Image 1 (cartoon, helix red, strand yellow):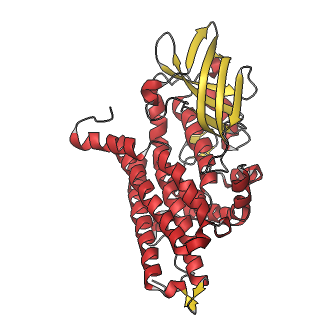
Image 2 (cartoon, helix red, strand yellow; image 1 turned 45 degrees about the vertical axis):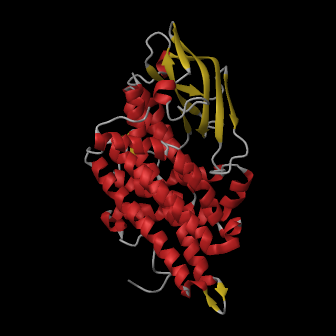
Image 3 (cartoon, rainbow, N blue to C red; image 1 turned 90 degrees about the horizontal axis):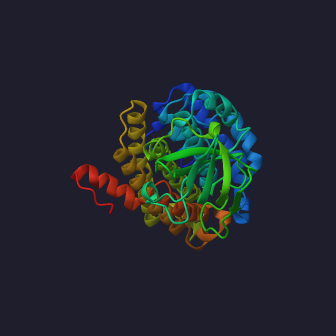
Length: 394
């Protein structure tokens, strides 16, 4: 291994080598974009709690919306590449990774898995080109981990339309998306159904949540639906129960695990750079034993989590990934992420809490990644049920 720290990346086991030349080149274009277009401006937008929408055209040119899905403008790449792209986006900034995870993962995944042929042709090409931006409305003010059983948003059939009532909370992109997928319970059949609600529809309102301490550059909305009328043609025709919603979440959970790896990588790389530049007691702090110990602990967390995610993506590509395998990756990687960003902050001392040194942003953002797409506790109980045969969630 080259001893020059500039030549040592956080991909210590060279997992990129598993990609072919074309996919590796795309991954590098994503990295370059995040380095040149996002990182120089993101602290300002993070402080203002505003998404840098000027980066959307550049993201669109990369052609990474809905990476793992095929057809209708989606590139049809592997789950492994899709995961590594999530990692690279998060390495540059977790807020941008989350934005893309919502748009290209949850929204486009809902379309690919739950829409009719006509609906796919109507919406997916514009979503793939990012001319249309989407949001995914599942979580509610009173329903988070128990949303499968506690969905309170209702849908009532009225002729050729549906009338939606309720609220959704923590909806990324919700205040500026062109369309929002709303999951609601049919009052007559109790089935969970999906609806595409377009911005500007009467009775639909979205207000950004204020004073977040994490993922501040992602705008999360509280959405209120008051007698919102949606035509039957905007109901996702292949979504007939929460099992269909769960298929979408299963597909994207691996991407969240990869995003946790990326958040860890970003913090580690900033800490490593700082350690080689910061001088104390007459020499760079990178030459101190305890600093090297912190760096090795961080790299160990990153490498073990990335290797776990890599195998998960291979199983996903083979159509063999299970819910509990995805849950283990999400739970494990986010715990290791929390440790890693904390050690990066520790290495920097007091400077670690200054945004100028970037690591503080990763420390804060890690708290959101740790909880969304299934908390550690719930994901752990999903795995626990698989290995013991006993359900313990309630």
